[in-house]
Image (cartoon, rainbow, N blue to C red; front, side, top):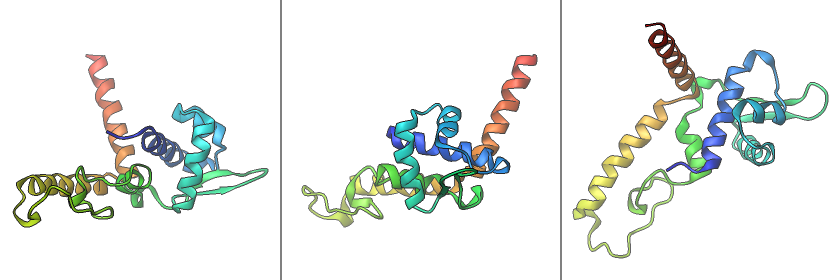
Length: 151
C-alpha cells in the first residue's frame, strides 16, 4: 500500500503538471489544489526538489514548478523516493536487495520466483505511468463520467 507521502507527492506533482502554463505555484496553492496539509507538503516538496523533479524559487514570482516534462516523470520514481522498495520481498528488490534469512537457495525458491514476476510487472507499469499518462487517464475518466451522467 502506498504511504501518505507517496500519495501526496504524486498529487502535488499532478497539480504542477496541470498548472504548467500558470508558472510557479506557492506551496499553499499546491496544498489547496491537492487537498494536502501545507506543512506536510512543504517537506514533500523539499524531497521532490532534492530529487530534481521540482524546482523552486523564493520571493515575488516564486514558487514551485516541474523541472522535467510530465512525460519524463514516472510514478516509479516517486514511489521509490517516498516508499523505498517497490518489491514486496527484499530478495527481488532492484535497489534494496537483501537475502532472506530463511532462504536455502534463491535459485530454486518458488516464493522468490512469484514475487520477482510481481515486482517486474509492477515496475513496468509504474515506469509506463508517467505524469502525462496520469493526466490523460484523468481526462478519459472525466469524459466517461460525463457521458454516463448524460444517459
